[in-house]
Length: 134
Image (tube, rainbow, N blue to C red; front, side):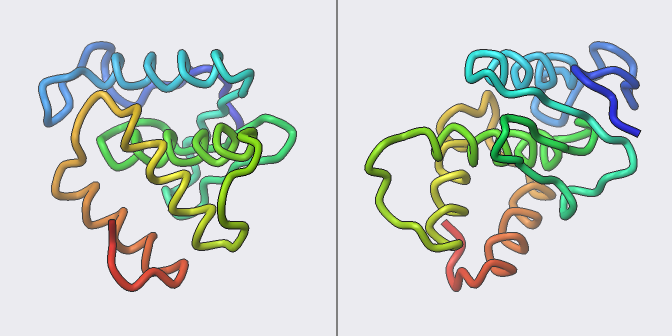
């Protein structure tokens, strides 16, 4: 099941995230960034953060944003498309692509990653062969 543009919220509208920024505000931010890049976001309730994916034709499949980790996951997948559009981007290997997407996500995020998100980002980084999480 694919739900485009944030339908099927798992939390009540305006539910607070750990940071004091509402989950609704985080979802709205993701959708606004995606729209500005011409990217379609599909929130898929059955996906975990480990199954999210960016497609070269301008779509991302991400889990519902129910916390900061899922927010960073969505930003990261959009970051793959944002960074792939830059001419002359250094690095073409998988680890380089992951680093650039991660850096983009951190640069546009409204909130810092919480403890759960830091853990998830470290696990993801190491799964791609990174030895030190940045």
